[in-house]
Amino acid sequence: MRILINVVRRNLKLFFKDKGMFFSSLITPIILLVLYATFLAKVYKDSFNSALPAGMSIPAELLDGTVVSQLISALLAVSCITVSFCANLMMIQDKANGTIKDFTVTPVKKSILAAGYYIASAASTLIVTFTALAVSLGYLATQGWYMSFEDVLFVILDVFLLTLLGTALSSCVNFFLSTNGQASAVGTIISAGYGFICGAYMPISSFGEGLQKVLSFLPGTYGTCLLKNHMMRGVFAEMEKLGFPPEAMKGICDGVDFNIYFFGDKVSTEVMFAVLAGSILMFTGIFVLFHMLSKRAK
Image 1 (cartoon, rainbow, N blue to C red):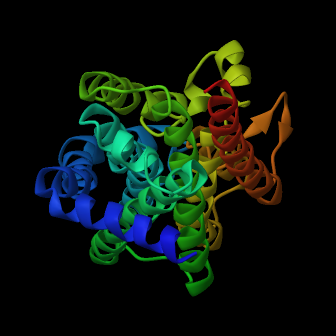
Image 2: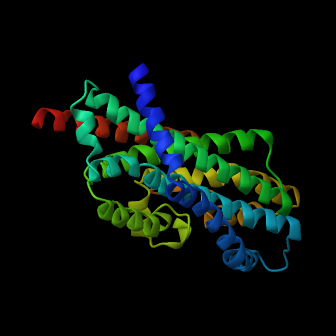
Image 3: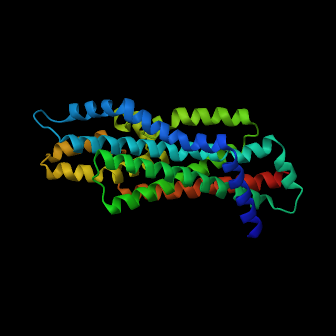
């Protein structure tokens, strides 16, 4: 246990010592928040207003709270995964500069090294994502706050689980990478494409029926939906108090992926949590399996 703690401590120190890696991980969510608020907020407002039934209006503060909640959900859903890939670069850097060879000639077991990379990556990513969450909630408080204390706790849990999913997924992918160029290429692909396939940049409901069915098998889809459920539950409850008809509420909830369906059946939040937790265990098990097979091969 002491060796594992030392390995984790070493990886964390190197991550925070590398100012470029740390600040790029920390600034990325903040930049996304600024870009969303600057360019996408008006688009979301116009889209939301156009979806309202004729003759129905919504208070400005409630509209701002709805839009910002949707933006923050998208930001956190993407950042938890993309930052994990950036934080997990330490494993690739050790391969690229030959440090891993120095470790392998020591009495330290490979399983401890693998666990050290995994835990350190998760810890550093959690620091960044929880910082982004705190900034996002502060911004939401200035625009229109309708979240309960329970909702905030659930959002914290959502970010925690999505960060673990990103850590497990990035560990599996980065296991096969050995150069910084490969890491940059994979990071670019993940950053560019993940937001679309998880429903962060565009609601899945806006895709074709076939693509919706395909995306319903991806765990990131349910992580994004969980964030939207807990971020936007308060604003939708307020709309119901204002007298929005059930048909309109269902259309709005479906349009922003507050509700998500698996082959026509609505998925409950309990099932979403189960899918997310199961995916974390599955990818973590795959990462462990990769190391066991690699050890046997050598």
